Image 1 (cartoon, rainbow, N blue to C red):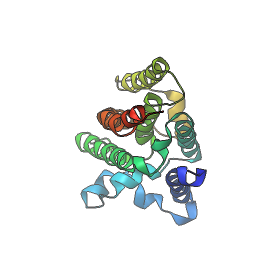
Image 2: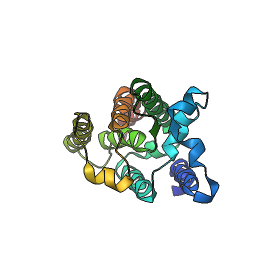
Image 3: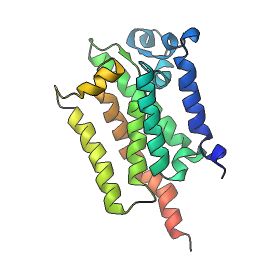
Image 4: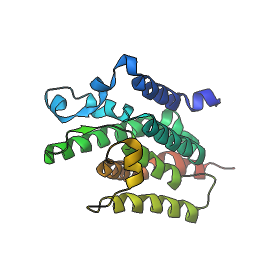
Length: 200
């Protein structure tokens, strides 16, 4: 498989994110999650909000995360075979954000990709083909522990908040982590078990 085919889907994703960032197009106002607009029927914002960023630093941080996942993760994670998993994370994280907004009147808007990114990162580390099982478990466990630690009231990465210009919505990270954990057995059965059963 050529690099173009291998990373076409992710390349398209990054391109869409970059287009949304172009100020003269003014697309952000139609894409980001806003509780009021979603309740009025603009449900596409549950998905398109993952394409929107607070600023270029926010965009660059998520792009770096994608690059790390592409580097350490299995090849199937970046091609068309993982499309159902990717759609699952987009929908689950978006729906989770909506539920948080309905439960918390103080929360009404969300920008970012990090919830989906954390789901991909945990899967990439858990199934990383070039690392031993103990290293993979340790790395995936570290990321999972970080996400759980963030859920403690009052806990905050101040530097990250300052970089993106807004408080990080840590619940999105939790939804991404849960989405990854839920589908890991399916991914293992689809991609890992058949590869082990194939005669060398």
